[in-house]
Image 1 (cartoon, helix red, strand yellow):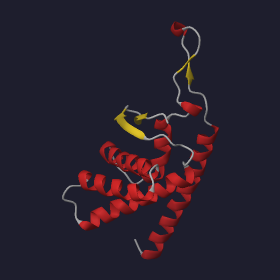
Image 2 (cartoon, helix red, strand yellow; image 1 turned 90 degrees about the vertical axis):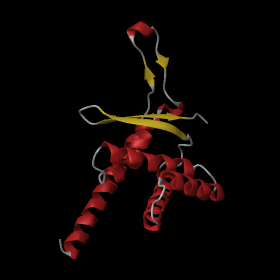
Image 3 (cartoon, one colour; image 1 turned 90 degrees about the horizontal axis):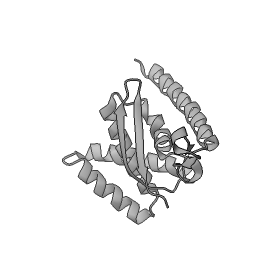
Image 4 (cartoon, one colour; image 1 turned 45 degrees about the horizontal axis):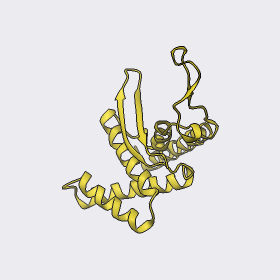
Amino acid sequence: MSAPKSKVKQQKMARKRQRKEAARLNRTRKRGGGSWSGDFLGPSIDFGAPGGVKMSEVLGDFVEPYADEVEGLEEYRRLLCLGQLAWNAALRGEPERSEMVNELLSAGLPGADAEAMTMARALIEIMIARKEQYFDHFRRPILAFEVFDTGDGWHLNVASAVV
């Protein structure tokens, strides 16, 4: 593919991501609920998180712009790991944030060359900026997640702390 065609394709993909991101953010703002009731439970019991938003949906929305680039469940799981790292780092102050990112990247990518570390750090910095710009009102740290294939797609569960 020639350079101009490649540039046009990249611009088209960027516009598509922006439209998808705007739609996701709109859904997140409108999302509510968090209550579930069943006949066997009697009256409605609230299992929802504070604010009625599930962190699994929030994390999914957070990494969505980058999900187009991954193929397969394992790559998506790695993307979610980077998303979790960026999310939790964004909740910390600057000196502590850099230490956390460096420590976790070193532990998570042992033996990685300088170029791979630089690329991972750059992606995390972009994700941190995204968290601060679009998801700053969510202050709950992500403790763990699990993702599995349902046959129709992927299902994400997230455990987060209530602050």
